Length: 267
Image 1 (cartoon, one colour):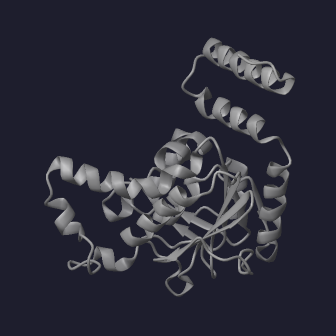
Image 2: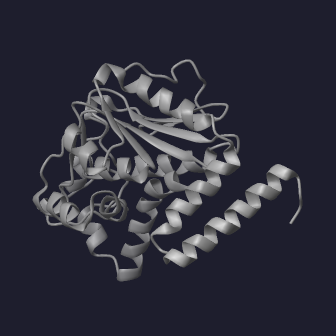
């Protein structure tokens, strides 16, 4: 795929992550195609930093991976006894007390959480493999546009682990409990057609049209007034945790804010 941000000076470019900003649109690119954008703690720290560095002007964030794969999951070196130099190995993590282990995983998860902030809409542009941590990173975004060669898979359970990078909640919300359990417990691949049919992806396009499709979607999102999008996103994100009557009340409150803002009337 051609890089849509190649002519922009990067705000961040390290540890396999590049952030570029073009006014209201930001692009976060995974930049290690030789390793199929394998993930590591250093990459997660860079992703977290990218979220913190987003200017307030940004309304839409596109997440993409260079090369043939979006992200093939964890760097395999993390599974070796010695792990990645300078990073805790799995054995070292297992030896930490409950509080220490919990804090470490929570730090890892931060790279996957900021994409759902109410002040932005995030789009994952996914081609090729999106496995394990790669699958969960795509799930961290609000929307997913996929190439017709996409292959999602959640392999953690097959390795004796669980998906712990915030992917389980959005996966169940998108495809339902039974299908989510089957996908995770079997570790099988989910292709483009099934991804769209199950609600996992918004749309699938030929690989050479992925960037254009994402660009068109971003433009459509930017066409709506920002405050209305922010309020609508907050309403929809909170709907599952509210009763019907609570959601009705939330709609009324949000609409009151919008009407007063549009009319220039203070609270």
